[in-house]
Image 1 (cartoon, one colour):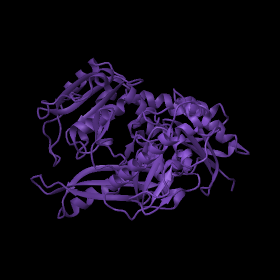
Image 2 (spheres, one colour):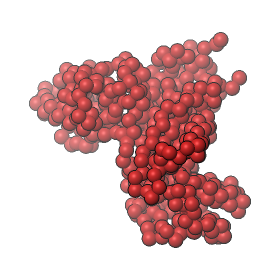
Image 3 (cartoon, rainbow, N blue to C red):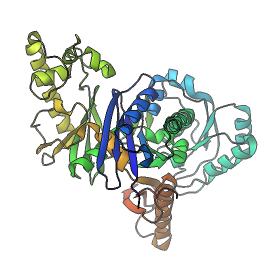
Image 4 (cartoon, rainbow, N blue to C red):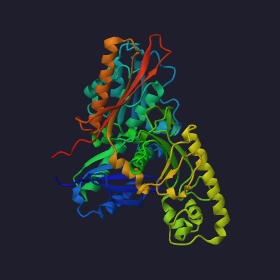
Amino acid sequence: MSMSLRVGIDVGGTNTDAVVLDDDDRVLATAKRPTSPDVTEGLRAALDAVLAGLPDPRLVTRVMLGTTHATNAILERRALGRVAVLRLGAPATTSVPPLSEWPDDLRDTVAAGTAIVRGGYFVDGSEIAPLDEDAVRKFVAGTPADAIAVTGVFSPASADQENRVAEIIQAEIGDVPVSLSHEIGSLGLLERENAAVLNAALYGVARDVTAALREALASRGLEVETYFAQNDGTLMAVGYAARYPVLTIGSGPANSLRGAAYLSGVADAIVADVGGTSTDLGVLVGGFPRESAAAVEIGGVATNFRMPDILSIALGGGTIVGAEPRSVGYRIGAEALVFGGSTPTMTDAAVAAGRGVVGTHPVPGEWSERLARAVRAADEAVADAVDRVALGRADRPLVAVGGGAFLLAERVPGAREVIRPEHAEVANAVGAAIALASGRIETIVPAAGGGSARARLIDNAKEEAAARAVAAGADPESVQIVELSEIPLSYLPEPAVRLHVKAAGPLARPAG
């Protein structure tokens, strides 16, 4: 059997990292290149660098990409599509219009029109009102948009009305991308609606990134399967990512945590990913990122899809000493003292403290005291952050990864020990390369005592989660249910639970 290789790429704010792994998950080549202002050029440079270390690049069969394109588009309010926002909820939800809590500039960039039509469900699956199909037709026909986002009240419990709207849109105006909220977010109408709208606004971004990646691969003679990393540390095929681009947000920290777990061999730990601009701290539970239990705000918009529980602090290799939280970012190679520049950075401080050997110039002696103070302040900030993410537990190790991991002290209060695995500087790209494909679903089922009807609903949820994992690229024969949780909804008139199911599995073998 011939050897096949796979490439993992992760685009960060300062650097774009790439690795090559073989069939046995051994790291064969690594590369780190500055992230370019348009992101894509840095991606190509990292790809070229890592391929240059291979005897035959044609052995590469898969490329996995974790990218900041979607996050940057939202934060910078650029390249976003115009979205028609349709809520199925009248007369119950008219008091709070769609997008009413969005920042004005983002709403003005994205919104192509909003409407609330009759429809929606109660939590038990009974209708609030029948779907007003005529109102749906009138709205979608009279509101030109790049995409349409559809949100129904309690659609995770019953998605029939949202699915019917998608059929109407297809029949009325053809192949316009449609973002259905029950496929993206969980319970919570406004947050789920926001997630669906952001997802719809990112369709063009996903299309452009996919085209750029395919062009970069084709121009280098590579015919490979491509995957995008998503925010729970797993992968999705290109077609799946094109439908759910918002799920790439948070993929960078998730990749780092998964890479840290693999490189260190530790499944339960605190991870500190030290980059050029910030340090992201998260917690590994069973080898996967601990997920946030709270609503996640993206670009000023509250959403409720699953994201890793990450605490970010303004500490990176490019952080300017005395000017926190500013960073020189990808310009560190020209501006830091150790590279002959004139800007004191945390990289200079760590080198002066003897924590690493970086650069081409010695640190000028007149900076010694100021840099020493910066190191002490950084150590205090890291210890405080570790305490906050550890939630009172001090028995877990701290795995230090990222290009700036040498900034961290040998011992960190709140952690049992500090582990620095080999290839830690490209842990994020390793995490992308080793990831599984996954799918998840969240719905509402009766509490215990529902008998065969309850069991059937749970089995249906498992099947749907597994089907979504296969759609994301998982091998149908190897998909397993890796998470099943039930959260009581005690405020309902009839006992019920929120059911969350996640399925995951290794990627299907390449065709042929």
